[in-house]
Image 1 (cartoon, helix red, strand yellow):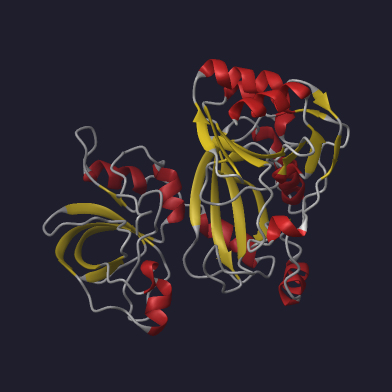
Image 2 (cartoon, one colour; image 1 turned 45 degrees about the vertical axis):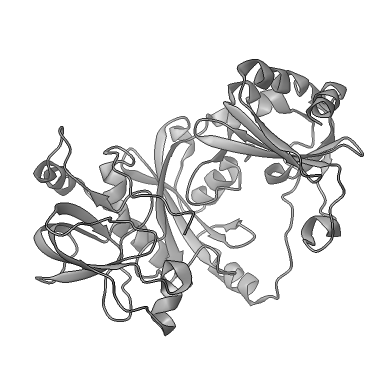
Length: 394
């Protein structure tokens, strides 16, 4: 529960169109009462955060509904990580998932926001009016998956918003977005998969986009091995991309490939597989990943050292130390890297480079000077300037 975050009160944490797509039920309601229910058990316990912690049962009375339907009085289970944060007597717009608990209790949609409240600049009536004017695209997305024989679960998994990379940056995945859903593949891969079903996201490079994610094939939960996710990319209020991914490998498939996905799920777990080296011709890490635009670099070592670099001059020095084209090789995973019971050599450093809306992970070993970029599948001998910089960290 220490990881729980308070419900967001920022009015623009996510756009109204994204919320209209994500929620299955949108209702302006008054809170009748807030109770601590009996500790759930069995199937209900398995569906709530906290492994059975009580959370709150919020009973509401609808004022107006713009999507879906509710009873004249309905209950919402607000988990121990509260998403509504409701108080008796208040009015709010609640955003609910289509999947219910076994007793019929509804659930909030979850992060980034599940409830909207009035602000000095926006009344709840104005929120509802704006939402009524938005044509939801989740029905179109569901039909797209079902048209390719996918089984779409009740409810959805997440909605994310971000700016698509520039067209020239589609080839690398290292510009990882700070999103609920992992985007581990390069956007060139997503564009290729989308094209197989007649969609084209390339013209929207550099534009704001929404990623709406469904759970497919009756698996719930990002951490479930074999969970299958269907993703649609929305730009200019149109579906411009679509693909499927599988946990934990985050392998991506075309909507045409349901048979291949089911075959993958039927196989015994095969362990992690690196992506194929995406820059076999060599790479300048500073320029390929725009390291000079980083706002912070956190690091830790297998010897227990750690820290954070936030001074712009030091960040610039970090980028300059990698401003050199290096020869790359396919990254490989050694048993020691996946066996947590085996002590790691005290020579490994991990760097998490933080940008405003994305991040990049690097691994460096002082014993052989090799630097790895996980998401793009390559390793390279680090420049001498970088080796000296890391030595100064110790």
